[in-house]
Length: 306
Image (cartoon, helix red, strand yellow):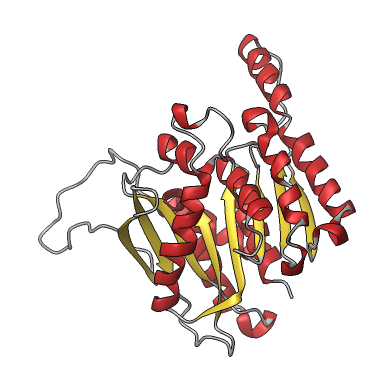
């Protein structure tokens, strides 16, 4: 299933048209080029009263009927960039459901109305936890953003399609992975599966680790968590002057070590923390940017496994 996911995602990305491509005039016998659409996908712009900001929401719903308990649902951060691949991976599950017995999820992408693949200022505001002094820097808005998801977005999705409220997942990469851990540690009942890909644990002197105590106080919810990280996220490659400077920054962040260590700690304390399952995957030959797409594939697989 994983190979099919990645193969489908690669095909989707290969079909994307880059800005500035040469447009040839249509001949009299040919139709003009049209904007490409994504099957089974819809989007809308939604203003939040909780954050005061505007979000672009994407949704893909399986063509098959919902299971008895409703469709599982996967909420994907950085939706402008990640939703197309996540939606295609879910469609692949639908095509193979008779062979695998898996039900494809509804995929909800949470993006930004700016239309940028990665709205850096907005994600720094929304995805980072409320560490001291961060509000003055335009950061630390994770609690308000989580309010938006819980109080505004989820009710909208539940009114749109039949959802299994006991099978909801959150996926986030980088700062999105940091937000995923923040949600797990502070409001573990919000989702049943948390997929933190390449989480920026280093943020504000590893503040998010201080929030983990909140998970122990809510042991009845039994969520499962997967951490992934690219093998190359702690290495800048062959030594050059520029690579040496980058290596110092990567060494300080310790992306691989931090993700691995946190997964080991969560596994060791799984029963005390009330976790149903803990997973860790180090993605071979992937750097911080490229790790997003295989993490989506492995995360979806982790979520749908019974």
